Length: 362
Image (cartoon, rainbow, N blue to C red; front, side, top):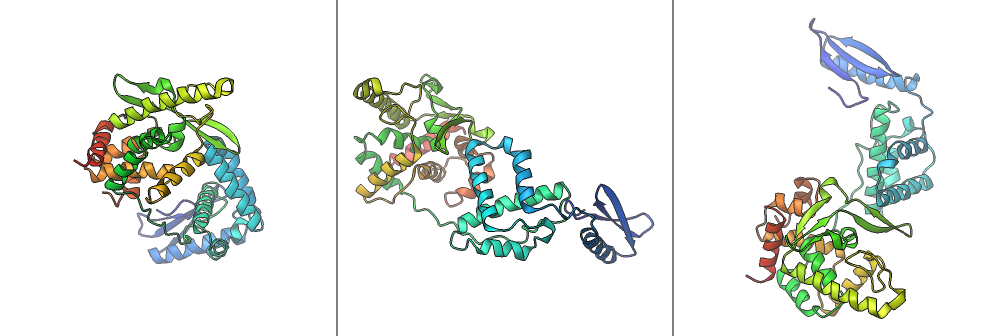
């Protein structure tokens, strides 16, 4: 069997080899006595289909990108949509509207070279192009994916996280800071920042000491958008150990104080974590506050998302099963958790208790 759009080969009962290729909805066959011979004929058949009009040559790159938005865009979450549209615009601004059949691996490599100083962006653009060229294969606009043979170089720098001792130092020395409830809660639950921002009072079950993760809240193009978690597994129930519960109690006290200070200017909502006027919690504001505290304590500067990494890494190091850490984080599958936390290599309660143990210094 071959790749979709590439054709297939098989040996017939009479001993001959047959190659099959779908061309404009028709199955075209060629025959040979040996497999190498029929593969050579199939390769020529693919070339002939392009040069002789077997595929419509006037399909162009921008048309493919627009068609992707049309057929798949309705499935994108707001943040994903904003990102995809931004990268599509970048592609259109950087290259000409070339015919798909003229796009070669060399053309792809030259395109990536334009972003040699921003390797992460190059990788994102590669992911976009690889995806849309796969769609072109499905729609029989192309025989092969020209991006499958070329990938921009990108080495993610290993993030320096806190040690357990540094983490305990942070929790102790920031205890009286107004940001402590948010940072300690995020550290001990491993929730994404948008998930924390979307938590409402009705999600908390004090009797079972759990909280439901049902929604996200983040800012997209200047507008606050409420959405669902990143994956189906993102909808989950997370156990709250004692530090996380203390953080929620402290947050309630803070909200009461802020509400009194704001008076009529307070923005009423059911959200657990807000800014000082009751508005949505902005990730950038929290990141800046966390960086400030890190610098004051001479600790490696972390972001809110790094606290999520800390949660998983420390739990794994403390012995929490990888499968349960994956569920705790809301990952779609264990392989994602393993790939992200390979350096660190039940239920949510097991994870939070393991984390609590390692940070207590036991």
